[in-house]
Amino acid sequence: MKMTRKQFMQTILAGGLALVVGKTTGCKAKQPVPQAENPYAYNIDQFKKVKPSRITHQELNPILFQDALPKCVTLTKDDVLLVATDKKLHIFNSDKTASASFALKQQPHSLAALTSEAIYVAYQDHIEVYTYKGKLKQTWNTLGEKAFITGMAANTSHVVVADYGHKQLWLFDTQGRLKRFIGLKSGHRHAEGFKIPSPYFDVNFGANGTIWAVNPGLHRLENYALDGTLKSYWGKPGMNLDGFAGCCNPTHFTLLPNGQFITVEKGLVRIKVYTKTGAFSSVVAPPDAFQEGLTGVGLATDSQGRIYVVDRFKKQVRIFVKK
Image 1: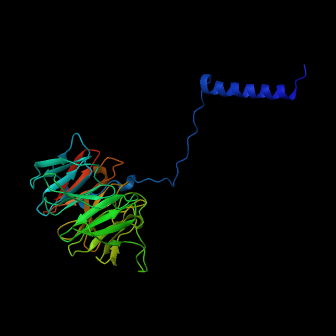
Image 2 (image 1 turned 30 degrees about the vertical axis):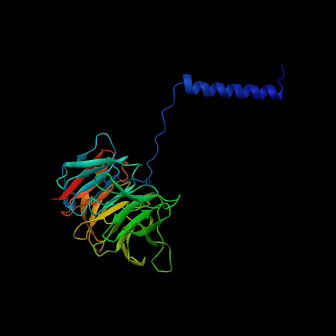
Image 3 (image 1 turned 90 degrees about the vertical axis):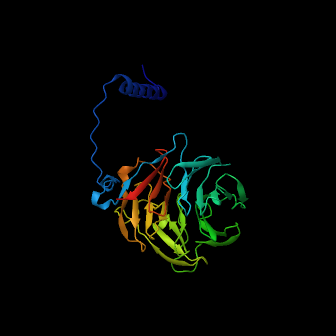
């Protein structure tokens, strides 16, 4: 019997479908062909281990938060520790015993404080000022719908805010009056503006009252005068210990009482010490001290040089001291 073209195509398609069904449901599958190893594969395993001689710090007993995730941390000048969780602020004495706590209106993004009578809490788009008893003293104006605060620092005369949404710093006096914007691209030969691919953008005051801020997309820390002038910077990309790995690091940093820098990176999580001039010094904690995938590792230091580390996976504030 002669087949039409349509009947021929239907027969072919039906046979193909049967072969496919047979291959996937009833037939023994062939052994997969081994794939050649890709010599260009991105592998960071060799950078996860750090020689013990490079590690200058040891870990103390952490502060545990069993029912809440720690978000951010700071210390007052008299070493009172402040830790914000989802919607609560926890206060610890200088011996790290719990002292007080109070509820927050929203999820906090950052903390800053000189004394426990003036605690600055940054939410996504604005700042509120509390006492240690939870009394609301001030609510500052919103920074706008685009704002996304990721860092904040305070000294006796100013509060500086790192805003990922606007890719800039906001400089206020301690009453919330705006003084200027800092970090916008300008005619200065080094002022390239902040390159911030992801919401990790931190800021601190130096001992001389100038401002240090991370420019993560450029893998460096930048120093600004209060008038907004870029004074200096240091840092470089790199997988080795003296560089900052990945697309955009470091994510957070703090300063020791002696002026040295403590930095932390995401991706390859490692906490390191740099000198006042930005030269690599040592390792506080290597990558294998942290669970893979950890981000948002906030940092703070006290007057004794102890380093406080937010580990949200472990629901802890971990404490490191020099050996």
